[in-house]
Length: 110
Figure 1 (cartoon, rainbow, N blue to C red):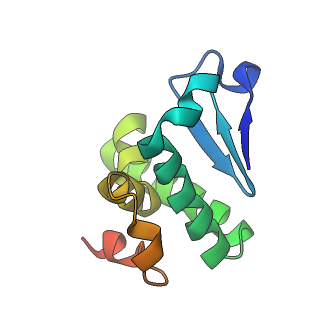
Figure 2: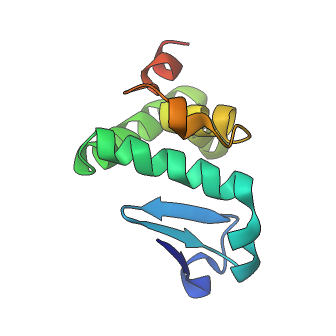
């Protein structure tokens, strides 16, 4: 399900965010952005694989690990394994059809 919630993302640089089972977009026209939607759908799959709550715990722990190491919030965000997988595969609109279970794991090891 895709929701548009402009107030939530109004003063941020965030175009979309996935909070299972919703994909929340900043602007209505982003519903047509297949790459953004695919990126967020990859996050939905990751969240399901980790039974949702463990995804969020892992995401936050990994984020703070990278903030501590890199001393930069944006670089820390881009270094999170879940984001690395989503950014790497967002252009492949068929990715989720062939994606193997726990595929984000290889982005931790890189």
